[in-house]
Image (cartoon, rainbow, N blue to C red; front, side, top):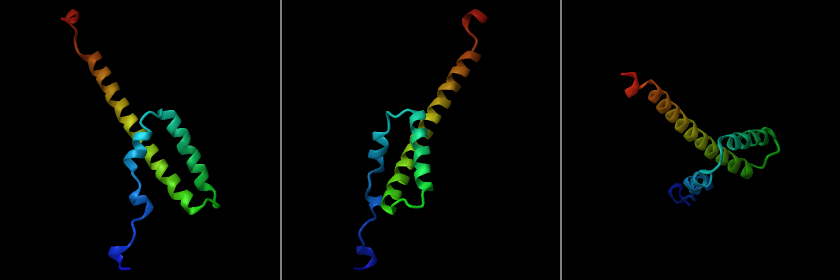
Length: 92
């Protein structure tokens, strides 16, 4: 078998978008708790290598969800602050 004929890695063939879509409804706090649990699992030297890759992939998806939620919250706060700074017709 040549290098070009090698089988794709399980990570490359995994549908990360489907995992992220599955996590769309998870709350930020719940995602952070799960990330923390995964980090504790990864600290264990006895973790199976197959499980390791799955847990790292799950953590990456959770981190992506958290980033999205943080960005959305930042935008929402900026809009609220901006609306508070706009003069109202009563102020004129």
